[in-house]
Image (cartoon, rainbow, N blue to C red; front, side):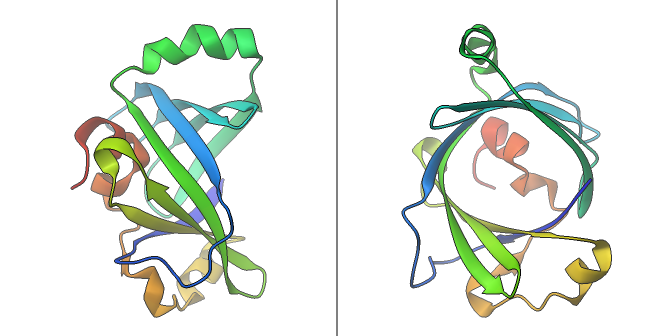
Length: 151
């Protein structure tokens, strides 16, 4: 399970790391919130299955070989996002994953903070730069962004 809050930023925080480029595409999207996605981060190739929506979701992730990924990636056409992810510390032990989107989603900036449990998520006081909390707003789920674009 992952416990995560998501935010839409109006601007980037002052200091960012170099970031890492992420390409992700969706093989399957269920309206109830389940998804199967592929992700390429440099040479790392992953398949992830997520279930549910909102603050707490199920998540299973595993590595793929290059041949498997190459065979599956074309099946995600029309359901992809490309972004650069930056890690920004927000408080002791927590970092925001700040995503700067490219292509049709250019201009969109989001931040996600993952927590050890729901209590920690509820107690989190987000810094002002994180902007608007959109946790649970399905319009900002990456799967919806990949299909529908910026809300």
